[in-house]
Image 1 (tube, rainbow, N blue to C red):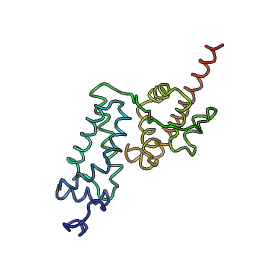
Image 2 (cartoon, rainbow, N blue to C red):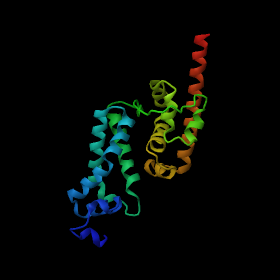
Image 3 (cartoon, rainbow, N blue to C red):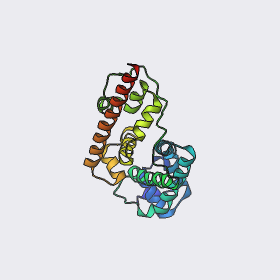
Image 4 (cartoon, rainbow, N blue to C red):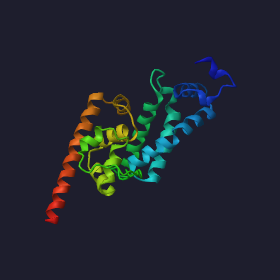
Length: 214
């Protein structure tokens, strides 16, 4: 343990996540734990709310996440990074909450984005691998948000998970793979399948709309 952590004048806010969890593992200092919660409160709650789709259930999962961080802090590998480890716990908590409530779909992906630069002719693939900061929001601008939510919600849980982590939480493939405990290649393949499936759903919806107008 670095010597600075035993210094009572150390500024906890200046320590890395990994230093904080290592220190908490040793002493269970509540102030250290509170710093970790403050750093990730908004980010993790937002992730859980989008993943589960209901604020009340997301709150349950959020509380469960940090309870597990407390209970499992001694299991944290100092050679790992804290953020993927935390997301792995949060993801498991979300799955547990969904199982308890018999919910297996994400239903609230609306992030309230506002932009005038949507390109309606772009393919799902272009939007997903392009330069847009948030490709799903960009795609949603020219579409009915409820339809976009339904389309993504129709994907399997495995594909929804990688969409959440890579595109909404901004994780790299390697980080998402670490969170989910799968190879990087599997993350990429699931995203590829998701892109193909969403493109197919979009094309089918457009053909149906054209047939109805005709």
